[in-house]
Image (cartoon, rainbow, N blue to C red; front, side, top):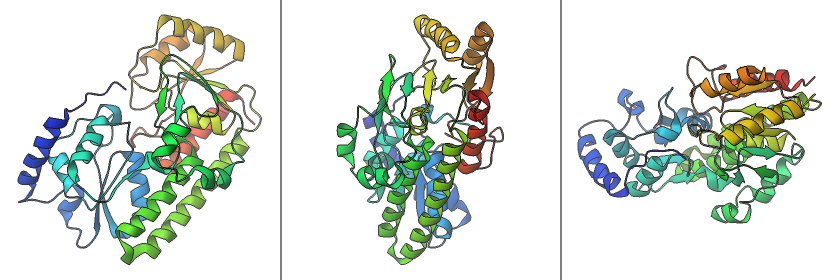
Length: 341
């Protein structure tokens, strides 16, 4: 991805400086208000923050490294943030989406670090992802694949959809599939139980409640996208491959999984042809990135534009206050674009 990487040596040095600077002050923005005996949790960006807050509840103080409105792929860590990672009790991140964060965590020495990518399976996705209907696999899928860890990256890297496009690679956008996100939630819950056994019962209760809510969201998507007039949707950011696979849709990304990647002229021409052939109606853009490409393509093809939020951050422009609400807005947008009844 097009991410400005902080060299490992620089991170190591910054960790030392950060710890020195932080020795006389609190460890994070969340800690500034005083958190008593709460577990100090650092989350890499919003999808991890949401899990930590919902599952941790009143027993955790969560700080996100990615502030609202910041594109997560482009995150540059401050010395203070790098130091705060090292002073955390628990760190939740998604390896592969923010290399600067990956490097800092590797150098931090924190015992309780959880990579969400090891709690489900990652697949290789390119600009085009076509999925068969996975919506009925549910818990069987979670039981079979939910805890394969690092081996899952190799064994399942090819995925189970039909993937095409110039910029394929391990797709980190697992949270946009409610079933995969529920798998991650279960793993996070278990890890919090181990990290803070005194409150294990509450973590389990909160995990079960969230997993049930994600199950309801999955059912809403299954029902709402059951009979679309077209199964193809076009998006500037190819973040919805897992969602497309889950609900039997086809994602046609103007570019690849990097939101800043520039599409080739050949890909633009291909999208023109696909839009006409598949009767696509809408070009989707997102809230945290430029809509220029989407509007240009829509104007050239006579298509509409719409917002499909990859949920990498919540701002005042988001169509919902949290993950669940924005995913519901995404469903409504897809139903409209696809002619689903």
